[in-house]
Image (cartoon, rainbow, N blue to C red):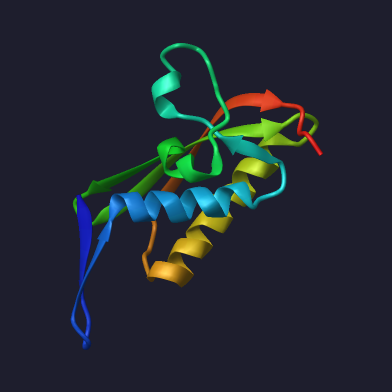
Length: 120
């Protein structure tokens, strides 16, 4: 699926993959995030940290009617307050997508897949 925008200059198509990549990039910049986890590994009970080129794999973009929802699977740093990290990620992702793509996000759902000691 994708989002179609008609502007004065022409027609713009934004795919869900682009939205997921931007959202994942915004999330890993937040304090307390060690990395993204792949949703497909949840079934196995293994939360593996994805490399930088795979940020979009830890993000699911859903479109329901005219509403946009984002599910993010993250791994947080040990010793951080999980509720604060999740709130910061939600705020940062909404802000980044609003400023870069001009999209209004209805919800950003955070799923904590693990806690790891961050390597300096």
